[in-house]
Amino acid sequence: MQTVSVALGPSADRTYAVRIGPALLETVGAAVREVLPKVTHIALITDRTVDRIYGDRVAAALTAAGLPVHRAVVRPGEPSKSVRQADQLWGELIAAGADRRWAVVALGGGVIGDLAGFVAATLLRGLPLVQVPTTLLAQVDSSVGGKVGVNHKLGKNLIGAFHQPRLVLADTDTLATLPRREITAGLGEVVKYGFIGDRPFLDDLSATLPELRSQPDSARWPQIVAHSVRAKAAVVQADEHETGVRATLNFGHTVGHALEAVTRYKRFKHGEAVLIGMRAALDLSCGTGHLPETERDRGFELLDRLPVGPTVADLSLDETLAATGHDKKAEGGQARFVLLDGALGQATLPTAVDPDLVRDALRRLGLR
Ligand code: NAD
Ligand code: GLY
Image 1 (cartoon, rainbow, N blue to C red):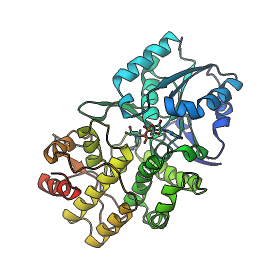
Image 2 (image 1 turned 30 degrees about the horizontal axis):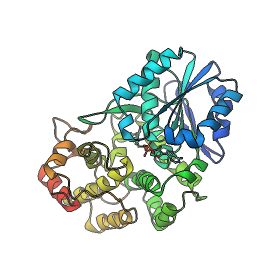
Image 3 (image 1 turned 135 degrees about the horizontal axis):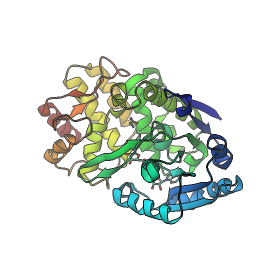
């Protein structure tokens, strides 16, 4: 097992561990007891698919550690990240007798982590949260850093909070049951770390992407997840509340979020939308004079190894352009983009870009 510490000020209390490796699900009961000794009950929030594969094992590990479990199971998929679903969970947990001695365990992908984290942040003005991520995307990104929330019909993640977990347990064995499409989507967030700050990591990954896509049981996952989590932890430690450098984690997300919004969060996996969005961001980095064409093309080649199934060809360019203005980084309705600066591995803070250039970049993605 590898442990990455997320050190948050000002009190050491807020520092937490991300444990990464195989066979960690069975340790969840003892681990929760260790970090949250006063907790008496667990709200285990998961989705139906994850529950079917891992729910009993996790519930048994918690119960064996003397922690009674209320299991709340929601529908898999992005539409569950809604105020309506959160409201249903608030009601269910209040009816089950939740009080301040309860903790929330989020077992699943980023949808569950964000939704259950939002419920934990808001119920009884905040319950402790433990993240047990089971997708690659959630292990490398969403379970770490404390962003929790739900979507609004006008945009992605517009309702939410910062609520750091007290512990993250990333059991890399769970990746073995992930469909290839989810692995590709997760790899989108992995390569993002390379694009924004780690050229050697990008070069290392580049040759192995096809193999990783086809091997959800690859022995390389613990190392890849740990490397990604270290990258995320460094950024979160430097700027927990996104007043500066944390915004670079949104590379590819301005167009990515817009594509998700115009397709009502149904067509693309989040990581797929980010993969397409990174292509647009590379294009804009070059178009604004920040990035040489050779570097842009090197970035495109890498993204070619992570093909996205769903098409953008039928999407309205005007609607998508307008949706970029609802992104959280937008100011006064004008979209801002994290761009690459000089070379792959170096990013700018969000930067306003001429809408005509954005229009051209969307057209090159295939939108009309
Ligand atoms: P997801 O949670 O929808 O999971 C994808 C699918 O995989 C689901 O159908 C799920 O049931 C299934 N699944 C999960 N684990 C499995 C396993 N081990 N085996 C088999 N099936 C499994 O999607 P995701 O890609 O994990 O997360 C996407 C969400 O994360 C988006 O809503 C995005 O906005 C959010 N996100 C949040 C942050 C953050 O910092 N909070 C960062 C990145 C993304
Ligand atoms: N996934 C972006 C962030 O955590 O800031």
